[in-house]
Length: 164
Length: 296
Image (cartoon, rainbow over all chains, first blue to last red; front, side, top):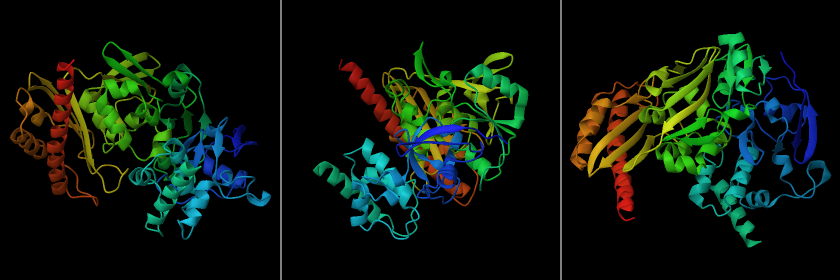
């Protein structure tokens, strides 16, 4: 068994740790950094619930080792709030507020993955139409909503970004 | 579903990686993008003693053009290849297949070499490599060797790479004048592995098909060229009847598996439909390329 010392940036803050090589980024975020907003559904890259943003790209944090994130900038669902996060107060970001307003989610299990995938996609494709959004989110499984309300929320966020 | 305990090395150069492979042989697995290997570890379908993580080997990433060939470093990520103007211009069949791999988040990490070394017969890139007769460059303790695509894929998830060899780059021939391409696939959901996929490349010379290449994904334990249909097409003028004959020939030559996604009989019908669609689109593209060149 190998433990590896790593330093990375998570939601703008420098974090260090010594995960075992086999530990996924998802488990490192949840267990070592107590960032339990990232959810684990299938743990083998099928459901998309654990999606986070690494160096500007959406990735599945269950399909990446924590040691591979050394030196990277990671953004999790906790990092999307504006003016501080969690116990520090803070407000929902534009995408989060648009999804809230659209009643995008029901049970909430897929929420962090959906939101992070949508955030990564909208930052690259601010003019995306409904079909492109559907394709971008096609790797994220939701068992409650039937997806329509999620798509509505992402479209609303895109409109609000443009309205600024 | 947590990964099994495993040792970990992160070499910085190809020679360090090759040394590690020589020492550990098939006790080691090479970790590239990890989008197939990490699920295999999670499911205990692979249980190597050592992971050799080549993500830090800079010399393995990049796209370059030399003498009519486009060389893609094995660690080149799929999204990078997808955004490459060089690949879009010189290897349009590869460019057509890349967006169909998994989902956006998978292509963020997944690599061209990783997919081809994993050799899932239902995946897109193996069919493209087989259609275009790509070349695989592997390095081992005794040096480098080049393996043609026809000899690379040996069976389900099995290639002719030896346990002490590292896939370093894959070379695709640049498309010649008058070449049109198409990548077709039928999957249950967007981003799923194809029940049947088809890579098609057609070259027209003076309105006649001078070269036709058809390679299926998902119909056998390796990506499969439709050689009977290719021979039938060569030297002919494209027409709906010709495409129909080629489709019947290609499907008739197949012996696809039955599984819960589709019966063998259904896969053959899908294969025939994809041959018709693929040829129509590839020939349309080839004619468009031809007309654009004549107009210059």
